[in-house]
Image 1 (cartoon, rainbow, N blue to C red):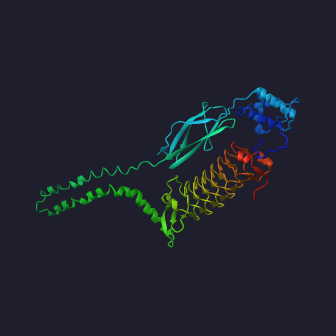
Image 2: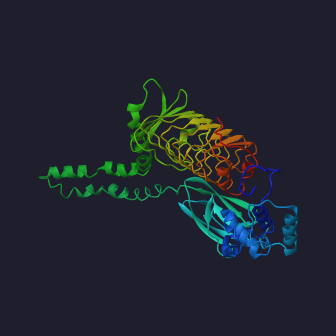
Length: 493
């Protein structure tokens, strides 16, 4: 359907503008709509009857000679089409021939890039071919500039650990292709080992303190006290200091000392009746304790949690032991990648003080359900991607949900919050267990591949009416959504 509604309406009369729009797309002239000259429509006395979104396509149809209007000088965009009128339009299109839009899938060719680096940024460059008018490229849903030859160059930020980026190209005819780029950001090689090596060489110098042999000279009897100086000079202890420094001190200072301080800091928060596996800091005034009895990670204090990469959270070394999460009142955020790949984490409790859930916060975790508190206003990109999440209760306080937030999760159903204005790109990409979704009337746009390959999706509950639904901008590759049954004026409850 022209307006993107999820219905075929087989008994309803098709309008002239719907037919003309279909011919422009089917005859491969859609790319010309981008820069269409709308002034050609002034030849019709009822130009205002054409839907705003259809005007560029109607202008292309007129410019290309696919349509010329009715004898009375009108276009009659909303009028039903007679069989004779349809036959005329189709015959004209057949005799006109196809337009320039290519039905061949575009190919994304990447220049060579390092699959592993220690740098925080990287430039991805390459080319799209064939490069036809109207071809577009996105990186994780964000538009990437193409030159006239299809070449592109875009800088990406790298977090520690594995980074995955999706390049997607689509031509004006709607034919799409994608390529996933994976880059690992590794820690730089540690440099403490070379630094100790110079210190053994100084140690011989102090060992040259056998220059007390010159002490016989000053051993002019009256001065026994100076002879005490030499006895202090042979300080083998200094020579011992350097000899010990090369191994224990350099390695101990960076790793052990801070950890001991961090582990010691939260002692006041540790439950004396429980056995703590490990403890530490995770923010300026935040502390964490992992208890042995039920694998519960407890985060206590006041303020924001730190943001992390995929492999540098403070509990990374023991994340396989985390089965439950309790964040206590006073904590205001869940940090980026905080519980990334905590595969045994199945339940979590968040307090009313939390206002945001960071990017990739629970990605690839074992979390199965979550009640989001009313204080939360934003959920970051990829927050629950590839997780075991089957149910989530999102309050109406949430006004922003990032791209790929529930990408390939196990969600079975979801009610989106009232006030949400857009469903981001890839939000429910490959959520194959998703059977229904409730969409509020506030939504005005549904992003690219937001419901791609949601093979079980059968029902959409929409709070508005059919006319409101018709004005929602639905991006390409959301066929599972548009063929589902839409229940208007319904919240699904």
